[in-house]
Image (tube, rainbow, N blue to C red; front, side, top):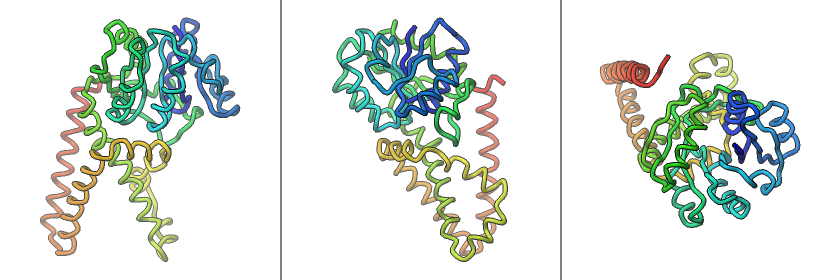
Length: 293
């Protein structure tokens, strides 16, 4: 098995570490890196067998190509690698939005190159291959889009490899994925960044606020330390779902603002009570249905 990873960062690097740990010499992994430093890091960590900045050297003879650059770079990257792919090669990705990518790839993919869209719902606030972990995918949701036209044999080939990550695979259609990802992932990242921005606008109180920072602020803003390039691309490629849910969030915050201004304690009490009860129910349901531990 020959696997090419385009973008050996947190996600690509973690996949490489996992598969090398599980398969050893039964798989050869090549990785596309931009700098000599990242090439050396990827090889030294054992995430890839070979790293280079030359696209042809990385993807030629690859059975599977795993695309994990920022979303807006995926389609341009596919255009670059297409001339060097062998017939029957499988493309998959880790993009956080799916509809945009598939709409563009349909226009350029030849009939003998197959695309199976994916999205591992995992990550860390750190980025780069040095943040990679062999167990990053374990027990995490991993969305697979089944309706992108790949033959059954290619689908099985990819899934037999990805199942070694021990992720929890969830089939979804493309549009539902993008809507759900906006609620569960994209809007929370924007909200976390908004809380940091709020602190940054504290003016004369800023230094005093810093002295009070504890677990609550750290927990609610942790994901604001994520890769800015990646998240800017996500917002550009899932704008409809993200903006709709941001407006709904604004509506909720507007209701809370009015209640606070009017000293409506009952509304605020009910707001916190319902949110706590619903969160507890949701997490219990998720753990019961989807968490094998």
